[in-house]
Image (cartoon, rainbow over the protein chains, first blue to last red):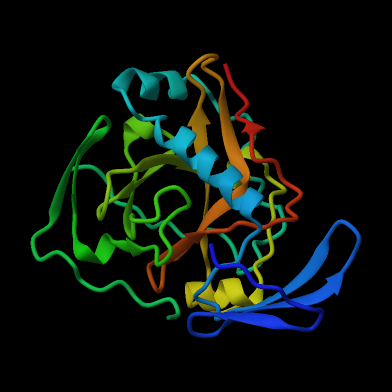
Length: 101
Length: 153
């Protein structure tokens, strides 16, 4: 691990166009500002790891055929409400999927 | 690198043998995930499969990198009032215009021990069908839970 000492308002640059700057230093926490291209997602580590763990669990859902029938026992009570507010980018959600042969 | 349209990666249709049917998918059905999906970062291309066996669910399955398949559902089927706002950076990443229709999918998990199913409403997958680009949103301040019960039985 590369270790730096930085004062307030000082920064480090990572790769091409990612900058991490120390904005404020508190007693138990520091405030960081991250500037990165939109193609570089930036997340709090614990949020990312939580979602990664959840995705790993979810990927096991179709591991065996009996699990599909188990899943289908779950009926969904709530139907799509036609009066629900539109998605931010417009509604209804477009269909885009492959049907079986 | 911003979101790019799906490039043809397969000449012949790809045959997928699944628990819920056999599918032939062409390159035009391939959805690009430039950052992969957390935990499956090497999976950069997926297809979305529907079948009578899946019912209201669909299957998002990788066709590049390790095999990964997720059961997904429209989050508004689970919670009709579901609404998540995309940031400007999200729109750029998806190559989406503010008024273009997007496809929202929530990942379903079936728990081994209890047989209970829940839906990840916090980190939905968003796909721009015009560009065939998708990614999983990871808001740090979402109102929605990571594990919303799929109402059932």
